[in-house]
Every structure is written in C-alpha cells, then in structure tokens.
Length: 203
Image (cartoon, rainbow, N blue to C red; front, side, top):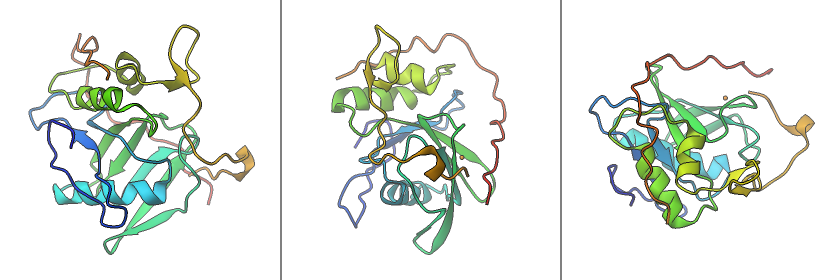
C-alpha cells in the first residue's frame, strides 16, 4: 500500500496489489490527480485492477485514454466486472499519464510510473503525484525530480529505454487516447483548464 489513501486492493487473478494514489478531496489543483505504478506494460492485465479499485471508491470508469507508444498492443475494449470499458490509444497522449473517464465524462488523470522503476523512487513519485498542494508540475517533472529514469532523457539526466515490453512497427500500431519527494513544482497556482481534445483514431 502506498501512503496517502486509497486502501490496498488486490487483483484476484494475479494476486498483485494495485499501487496507486489520489489527491485528497481538498481542492488541490495540478496537472495530475494522482499516480499509478503498474506491474507491466500490458493494458489487458493492468487496467482492470485499476478500474476495479477506482469503482470501489465511487469513480466508475467507462473509457481509458493512454499513449500507444508506451503500452503494449491491446484490443479496443475490456470487460471489467460486467462493464465494457473502451480503450482509446493515441500516439499524441502524454506518455507518462493515463486518463480514466467516467459515465459523467469526469476525467481523472494519473501519473504513470514505469513498471521497472526501483521501489523507493516509484513510491516517492506516487506520493508527489498525490500531494495536497497546488502544483504546476508535469508528469515528467514529478518523475525526474524523484529520480525515476525517463526514456529518451537528455544528456546529463537519467535515462532508460521505453518501457513497453513488446515492440511493433509503427504501421502495426492502431491510432485510437529510494527517491525523495521534491515539491519545487508547487510554486504557483495553475488555472484549471479543460483537458485537450485528442484526435480520434481511425476505425
């Protein structure tokens, strides 16, 4: 369990805990609403436990928007406890986030910590993503400031290969959306703006 809510939930299929955090309901603003540390890059394995955990807190999910280049190939739909959830993959989506969309169109954007991240750095990033402060930090800011390796990082920064576990050619991809807590991002109150509308995939 990661500190700062929600209680631990375990996937009955894999026996693994869903490692995620959410900002408290105190009005704190930021570019992410919480964090998630999946075990693998397989959407069919990782999204159902997160969807189940969110539903248990009264946040049902009907659509998931994610980055196609970060995650393994997947189908367009999942059935999670009799609910059909649409998976919307985009090449243009911010690579270190997923957006969970409910029936009321409310969006919850979560920072995604790469699966292979060392435990200390991963937990620090999750706590930072859920901190009860106004923050203008991007997903990359939070990961970098908490010593999480980033794919394609510039010289002088920590880098690691992309964390997808299966590589495919671009033509095969469908287009459809130990660290320490560093609070340097909490320097100003950002305006709360609507999330950008992303291009729909070709059917």
